[in-house]
Amino acid sequence: MKRQIIHSAIVIACLFSSCAIIRPGEVGVKQRLGKLSDRTHTQGVVWFNPFVTKVIKTSVQINNIELSLNLPSKEGLSVVAQISILYRIDERSVPSVIRNIGLTYEPIISNVFRSASADVCSKYFAKDMHSGDRVEIEKAIRQLMMKTMEGKGIFVESVLLKSIQLPRTLSKAIEEKLESEQQAQRMEFVLQAARREA
Image 1 (cartoon, helix red, strand yellow):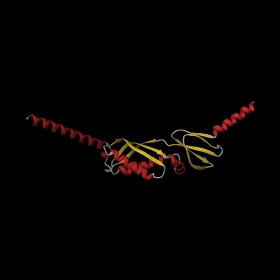
Image 2 (cartoon, helix red, strand yellow):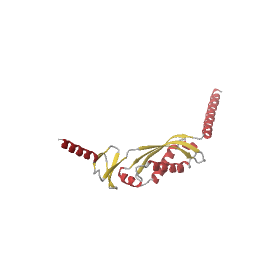
Image 3 (tube, helix red, strand yellow):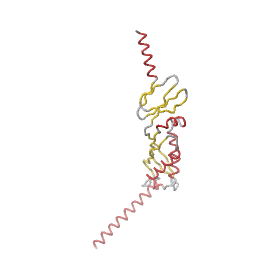
Image 4 (cartoon, rainbow, N blue to C red):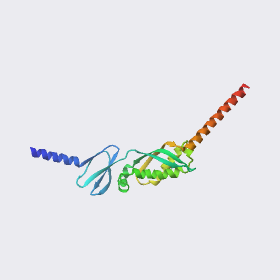
């Protein structure tokens, strides 16, 4: 009786150690004796020999990298920006990504972004990054990143410049300009009202 219980426990332990569960949003790839398979496994149970094989799992969901950077502007100013990079790994390219980059690909994406953002932002004035041109800048950075990472299996969904902090002198100059424009509009309104009364 005891032997049967021990045998059953060993069988159950072997069964549990020879299967991997791939959750939704994950992809698994078998690595047998150090050699990575080209076949990917999506959600469900994957059976393998635990003595010679392991299953490497990675997320294929959209992930977010948060960065805070000093971006150069066309006039040579330094603009502080809070950025989000939304990216995902192409499901079919997971074996290639593991072989060529590994599972720590966030530093590579961050470095590609730093280079692309410096190239793009240096073509724009600091005030443009704070205006309607922001969307255009985001698209240009994303396109340059995609060009750099073409064929690597990493897809950049979008680049979001969440908050832009202009240099204090420039912010003050913009505020003064807006204030003077508002005063000019008020004066124009007063003059028009005076003409109507006359």
